[in-house]
Amino acid sequence: METADCIVVGAGVVGLAVARTMAAAGREVLVLEAEPRIGEHTSSRNSEVIHAGLYYKKGTLRQHLFPRAPQLLYAYCAEHGVPHRRLGKLVVARRAEEVEPLRRHMMHATEAGLDDLTWLEPDEARELEPNLACHAAYLSPSSGIVDSHSLMLAYQAELESYGGTVALRAPVTGGEVMSQGVCIEVGGAEPMTLMCKTLINCAGHGAPPLARAIAGMPASAVPRGYFRRGVYFGVTSRPFKRLIYPMHGPGGMDIHAVVDLAGNVRFGPDVKWIDRLDYSVDPSRAEAFYRSIRSFWPGLPDGVLSPAYAGIRPKITGPDEPPADFVIQGPRDHGIPHLVNLFGIESPGLTSSLAIGEYVAKLLGLKAHMPMPMQAVPAAE
Ligand SMILES: Cc1cc2nc3c(=O)[nH]c(=O)nc-3n(C[C@H](O)[C@H](O)[C@H](O)COP(=O)(O)OP(=O)(O)OC[C@H]3O[C@@H](n4cnc5c(N)ncnc54)[C@H](O)[C@@H]3O)c2cc1C
Image (cartoon, rainbow, N blue to C red; front, top):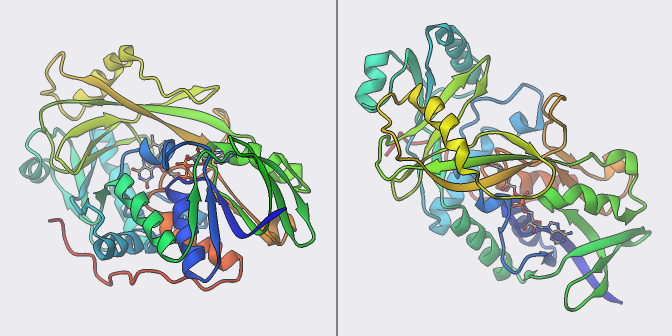
């Protein structure tokens, strides 16, 4: 039987970040990816926003990872030449009754340590973004965007520089917990059985089914996975320079405007619960997009939205349940010394990828080598 030291399942942005962190901490790492290319699923189907940490509830793992997560990511991008831009985000009240909730929202974020937020009256917001209609807004200058594919390639290159490997077309189909590690079955064109000392399950949508297929993993510790699709529509004009996030109810968000590194603007993601991985974009959803976008961009002309792409949030609670936090289970949670499972890593998983890598390394008793986070985040460029 072939043996390996540390196996990471899944070459999305989280799996690759975990892999580069484990390799930098001195482990021999092999990443097994089912697809023929890295980052084919959620990691290449998102908003590519570097979140500053405005929304996370006290006591959650999401909040625990901030503000370190974006600091690590900005430092990493600068150090490794990954294209990114700190363009800033406006969180906006579209209705008069949203102004007070928005104020509380900003206060909550300030209390959580974000000391760079600025309150804006409607004319001040319009000075920054002339197409924006709002009753109030606040500016988060340290929110930004990143080229997620370049980021994944940088993680992969770093992993390889430490002697690690990514094997593609290598789906892990199951395994068994043994006294000295985990024995796994790899399918694909060259099926094999591999024994590893440590297994880290970063399989995104595939994480719950994979954990269930590992004999010895307590079934009661594995959440059910759900699929919640969000689609995006693009425009050819460039109505906004910054990210625009409208308030929706107390603390929630509606369809937002995101800007890519080329300056192109797209809108999304919306919400639809589906029962399988299906990335199709239904053009008839445009009607709801026009309505929602015109609530903050009244000048949106008819007929300009075109379907862009879809992403699917890897949920671990269903439509009628409260949203779940990130779940990262280590030896203390399930009693298996050689196994870590990551479940429900939806937004802000891209922003948090390095911080998650650091968290996983610590769970396994390793000291992570991380980029030096910047002390002060410079204002929007
Ligand atoms: C619509 C949307 C918008 C988002 N916007 C943002 C944002 O702006 N900012 C932000 O920070 N985060 C955002 N996120 C969240 C972010 O995209 C995810 O948290 C992140 O991409 C998750 O990465 P991952 O590596 O865990 O999962 P994935 O990218 O899904 O990777 C998992 C990998 O595992 C592989 N795999 C699965 N099963 C197996 C198996 N059995 N064997 C081998 N390989 C397997 C898959 O092929 C896949 O490549 C968004 C998410 C969505 C859906």
